[in-house]
Image (tube, helix red, strand yellow):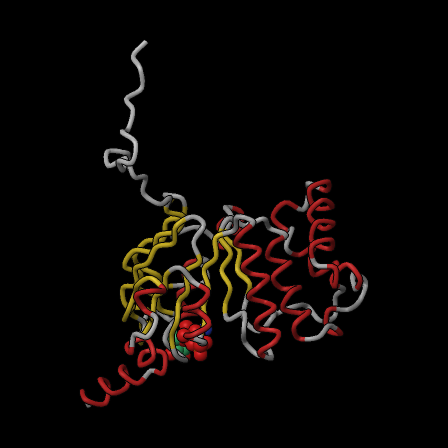
Length: 269
Ligand code: ATP
């Protein structure tokens, strides 16, 4: 049997193959419109690798929510391509996209206020609702993992505090055991102390193996939390890079405040 070639002590394994990061989501040249006439996204491309935290930053109206809705099959007029684990999911209906392992936690901690905590969580298990053992297992897991939800399982969701509702919204998303969790402004409407708690929670979820794609407006928070970021400006990617590359980059601040885009728009008129 041939003996394995040994790397001399102290030498770097220069010939060792470097495996490319596994690509989970790829958005290619995406154009989107709600009415078929006015385009909101103008050829957006981005990718998310497995076990990454990627954030989309942008000012009001930049197209962040539209981008997520387009990925999830919720925008009627879309051109371009969305791939998930190499499969083209562009034309799939939303429920089939969810079934493949992409879950969205919508903005504004949307819970169903007139339903109990348990009922809200069960909605997250819709795609496998017939597998009762699995539903029960995941429900128990969530109430153990988030004791505040366990203690309040029979309370109406509308009676929870803002921070608790955000936790419920995230836990409902986790009920779907997603490979990719997309969170639309998890910081929105929360006091700073709660924002810190929610982001700690997200870090745990990521450490447990869920890849995260975030939408955020809080640039500094996003840069400190993410591996890579994309800045959307008027429906296009204006800036992209790693957190280290974008920390202190004045273009992020400008795009985030919408200054550059508006200045250019004004310059044209
Ligand atoms: P915000 O942070 O304020 O939510 P955003 O970056 O998420 O902003 P979008 O909500 O995607 O931006 O909006 C981008 C553009 O698309 C805006 O001009 C908005 O008016 C338009 N738009 C958003 N939703 C719809 C809709 N359902 N129908 C028609 N136009 C829409």
